[in-house]
Image (cartoon, rainbow, N blue to C red; front, side):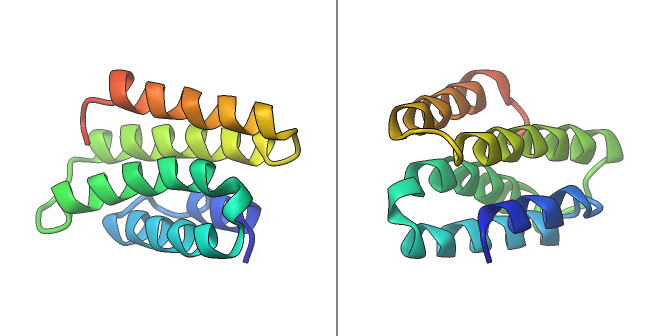
Length: 108
């Protein structure tokens, strides 16, 4: 499986905790088989895993789930776009996503 498939599967999902769990597991596995792009996969893995750890054992309001899914869909789209670019652009994309997650995503 490649990241484009992982991102598409997540985008087409309902955004439940199980889909976030599948996203972080799949992206984490991809880090092993595509180490040149591990930084891109790592940032989405961290975000998806944080969502699962915070909300796995509780009900999540629909608006929170939608905000989280929207954020991850955006990160995924940026990763897919970066994968076709040179190494410098991929690093800038990973850094940009990490900064956005750290400073603009408050829910998870």
